[in-house]
Length: 329
Image (tube, rainbow, N blue to C red):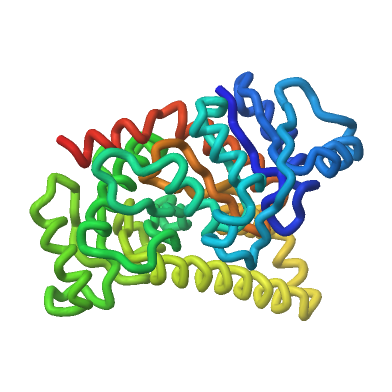
């Protein structure tokens, strides 16, 4: 298996990407990695780390898509960007999956246009795993499509269910539709019409769920439109960061509290790891004809390594075949 990695994507690229690629190798079981981007910068970053080990090669790309570039402009004017070259490698069969922590809109646009959508899929969606009391909840869509139809939402449920079965081992994933209440009369026309589609499907649909239910583990999969999902994701990250900052400040105010903090140190570390995005790697872009993993723009080397591992797992589990089967019974 070969995985293309966008070496120029992310706030601290290419250094952390190169480092993450090297860190990922022991967990990949012999997979080959292709670092895509400006060769001189990649090789300079690798030199600081002692050079590139076997199983990693470099493919040059002369352009970089910046975080504030418009996806449509990137498609037209940066055809030799690291994102475009990664997608091309998958489209041409030179790589089995791709990973990028770069401009999300550009990754979605390039993957959709070049890889195309799977048979029967209307729109691709980004699925993110969010911590819950029972493990993790898969939320889709987290920003790929902000103008949804009821059919799009239903297909998100099908795609995320297939991913939850294959990658998370959930035999009968419970699917919930995000709404402002559980009553049938609540929600927009979009949500109510999507509810009808879910009710008449073979999915393990449990009905409407509220925002707080994402974290209680009521559902394995929570479906929403991309605008809502992205706000949910960013608010959750902000709340988690704020709570840990406030907790740290509170625990350091007195000697007694500092002693108490030492007693629960390992528990706090375990909790911090569960809500840390770097521990979960990337979010799959489901619905495109290829395996595409999108990592957080602020990813550190550990996050990149985990994103690469997740991409390898998704490709090995043949999730796309099961998505097509679910949409075209």
